[in-house]
Each structure stands twice: as structure tokens, then as C-alpha cells.
Length: 253
Image (cartoon, rainbow, N blue to C red; front, side, top):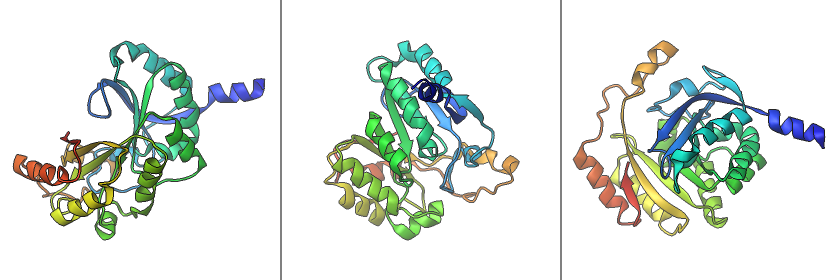
């Protein structure tokens, strides 16, 4: 038993960076922990430095993250807490499970921001114990999804169904990229697919931005969306109006 306990408290997780007092990644004020490693290759990725499984990151004892969260807990209030983002957090699901359990022991609300494309027993346990899943659905159209991410959306949709079937509250997040994910027909297909999901508590339309474009060249990577313009207010309003035909909890974040 002592050996098991020692292993539990010394487990490490690879952390890229932190954001304190975040207000865009889950309810309330949050500590956002950006984890290293991602299986997607999203063309608009704002954190390309988190893709490589090692990259510019630090092996961090999970207790160090618990201490960081506890030092900020007074700012969380009733709605806030800790959000694990990335990268793709489920890349490190095995280490996240005991970390989330420790945070829950301290009464801290925990969110996972995920593309939903990784599935194994560790991921299933992780989703079972967090308070909220923020599911990034990049595209409902399989071909356009692969163009946008170089990966399939099949498991993402299966993950959404698991969340619905298991009564796990989740937010659906959708980045609006002109020429890639802003097609009305695709938004309507997504709406039809998810309109009966009562576990969706919020739909977020996320404007496309280029804030991470400057990171690509130093990493020896090409930013492939050069020339793609950010959304106009009218485009965002039009997308929100379509989503609102299917959901009553739509927000432009």
C-alpha cells in the first residue's frame, strides 16, 4: 500500500504553461493548465508549440499543480476552477486521472478542453470524474474535417455520444474559419446531429484569429492559413443565428 501511495503522489505530467485568472476556458475564473502533446494538426492552431509530445515543456509533479491551484482557489469563487487544455489533454490521460482526483479532493471544479479523438480506459475514467468537458468539434463534414486537422472526426462524434449517454455535461465549441468551417450547410448538419443532446449546456462559436501565427516560423513550421481573414461581426452574427435555430445556449466567445 505504501508503495502504491508513493507512486501516486510522485506521478508527473508534462506541462507547457499556465494561465492564471483565465475567463475564456470554462465557467468563472480559472487556472488554465496547457499540457504538452497533440494528435491533431489543426491549420489554425494557436499553440503549435504544444504539438510535439515533449517540446518546450516541463515534467511536473502533480502535487505542484495541486499547490498552484490551491494558491489561486480564493479567486475561483463558486463557478471557477481548473481547466486542462493543450495541446490535447487526453494525450496524458493516465497522469491526469490521479491529478483530477486530487483537485476534486480539494473541492476544485475541473474542466477538460478536448478534441475528443483519443479513447481508451484512462480517457473514459478521466471524463467520468471531471465536472465538465469542453468538446471541440472542428467540423462535422468528414472530408473538410480531415482538411482542417489531418485527422478523422469519427471518434470525436463517438465521444460526444458517450458524454450524452453517460449524463456528462459538456460544452460544444466550434471555431469559425472562413473557407473551412463557416459553410452554412455544415453548421446546419452539425445542428441536426446534436440538437437532441440535452447534455450540451453551452455552444460556443469561437472566432478565428491569427494570434499564434508568429510561432510557426521559429518552430520550422508553415502557417497554412495565410490570407484567411478573421471573421467580421456580420459573419459571427450569421453563424450564431444558425446555431440558435438548433440550440438555446449559443454564445460567441
